[in-house]
Length: 334
Image (cartoon, rainbow, N blue to C red; front, side, top):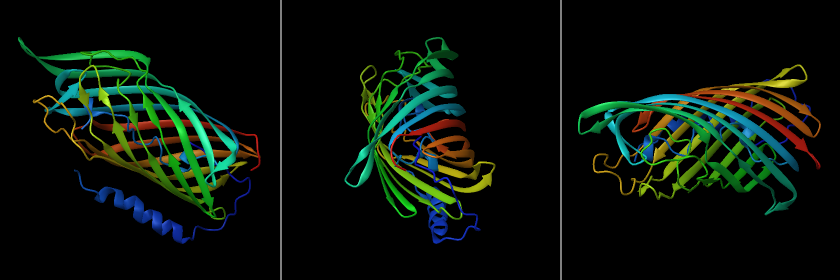
């Protein structure tokens, strides 16, 4: 969700660089990590949030405006009990539509030699959930739909260091429970607990060939949901991408792949005895297609990502669809 400055002129030589081999190996290694839970089976880590070139920390002074849309559809087997807002369901079906407008500002002065950025993202979520609940009359199926404000992502710290074709990133997103939430309700636009997600990234971009690659890793640390006395475990996650830029009109088309792995490394706390440790895992890979239009200090980017989940445990399995629009308004030097 974060954009770096794109030079207005790129070479057209055929891809040939050692950085490609490094990132191909890194991308493939995501799927070799072993599993070591999350309330509702879905938490603050969302695959595809930070994965490609446009998600790097900005390194040009000025504003970045980024409205995003995310659609997710998934389900979980009825053989798995899922804790949701104080309830326990036998499997769930989930449909989520999210609109996430956000803005970042990068300062002229550097911090520790890096460009320093702050920002925030709001959320409006439309949520549909259905599951089978136990009752004195037996098992009953229940479905709910809710729309409302989601939780806010605050970014008090984002640093970007550039060294030739490489960029190193440090980010500290903070998830604030500003969303609509009610105990005993299956569909909630908000999660009702705080979380921090320290994230580190390394990216490679070859200005002559148009090849670029990124790898981000983070650890989501969740606070307790005070209404349910439930604390979701810590989630270690990785997102990576390989992309090739192709000259198209006044800009560049980007074609590539994005992969992700989320692996919970600690048990949930105070979970229902019907749920157990309930550790979560998710992994997948899919295409990322975009268009970039450099305009001097300003830049416009549109990118679409389809990320199907190919391997899951104790979470819904389905497809993430992302549509991101980025407008970078440069006010300082390139």
